[in-house]
Image (cartoon, rainbow, N blue to C red; front, side, top):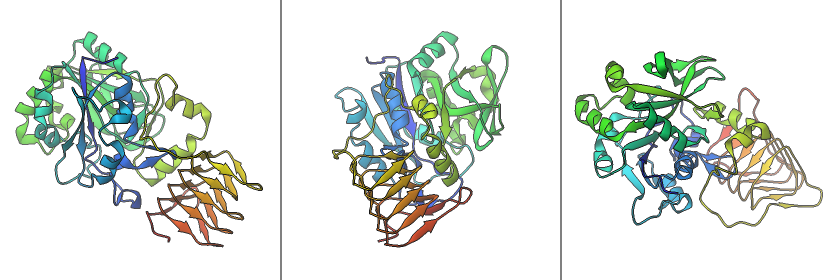
Length: 368
């Protein structure tokens, strides 16, 4: 199925409001997630499952890891002669401004992507709020509404200072977008559908305000543009800092939540890797954990998430932790309440211990 109605636009040219060793050498969009995915997989998969076959990907300055992962878009059916994946340049600086995901300057810089399309709509998404939705149904609902923009939101399940909330009036029309949201607010999930001709008008009209987010720029014109809302009643989680990354990852060990995000009818696709199944040695013990292909478990793993190629030697233990690709936990070592980035080796009989409220985070290749 090819969706002729829309093209996609994914922004990866932004940073979080808090510094982290997890994003020193990579963008938020390319942060590993749940042992086998990266955050960019979710917007790409939502678009692929809706039949969108032309997608622009706005690159950050530290673009190497994201391009290494997505390549030509083959794993999302985007390696095509007509359409396909278009990595497009972002501006040479990011922003830490709260809620800034759709920088108008990036949109203006890539005006040609929208001018060359014949599709009437553009679907825009960021990468750090992840979900699995029926995007084709949202495009159809936008078309029926007759609005210029349709913004997708969920009922906020907790307080978020890094999200935006929608103030919604009669007939589901958005009156205002405000920073931050409380429990029960209409949380914008950084996904919207916009008429291509409306987007081109915004590009031409707001050239002088290109330093703003698109919704900041058009804030005074919501009545003229006609901004509609669409409530997504599924599961959506935001990754904004190390704490939310850890908490949401641990939450997804529960099938009640994981089954809402990873659905057989709308699979989350990722870069294919050839690796043998995980190997469990005699005497090993693994409970309530997600363990990826290529792992070797000789010791104990409890309540943790292990990426490809992790080795837990005999006598070692990993508890309530996220261990990324190719880490080695040597014999007698203990890791608890921690996030270990790629390529770390924890020496024998070493203890790395955080707390549920103060997670220990170790950057890439720090312990060799």
